[in-house]
Length: 186
Image (cartoon, rainbow, N blue to C red; front, side, top):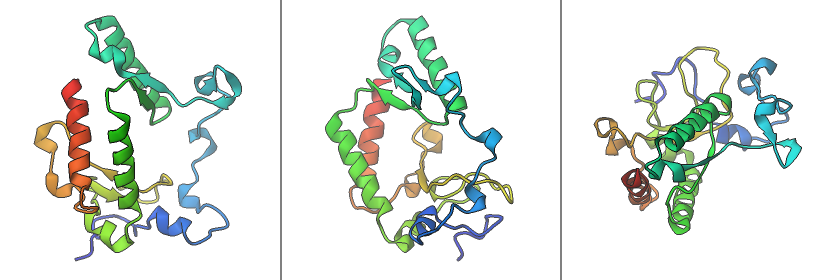
C-alpha cells in the first residue's frame, strides 16, 4: 500500500530536503511577498526593540479566573495571534517545566527516527492526523517548510489513539499526560 496515494502530488518530507544540502529553498516553499509576515508592521514589533519581531505571548492565567472580561480578552488575543501569525507562545498554562521538557524530548526522539518508522504514522488528506509535511490538497499549493505531527485530543469524538505514535516507546503516555493535565485545568 502506498501511504501517499491519496495526495494530489508526491509527498516530499522537509527533513529529507534539508538533509540534502540544498543551495536554495525550492519554489514550492517560497510564499509570495504579500503572504509573508511584514516585520515592519506594527503587528509584529517587539515593544522593547522595534527592530525585531515579537512572537505573540498568550497568558492563559486569565482563563482560570472567574473574570469573563479577562477570559474574553485572552480568547481575542488567541484569535488575533492565529490570524496574524499562525502560532503563539503560551505562558501560565499550569504545566510543570519537567513535563514540558519530557514532551519536547519525546517529540525530538520521534522526529529523529528513521523516515520509514515515521512514515508508519503518515497522515492522509482525509484526516490530517499523523505525521505530515503538507496541509491541504490543492495541487500546486505553496507549502510550509515543516514536518509535523497532528493529533486530536478534543472533542473526544475525534480522538483516535491509533493515530498516536507508537514510537518512541513512551510517546503515547507523555502525550496523554500533557494533554490530560492541560485540558483538566480548563
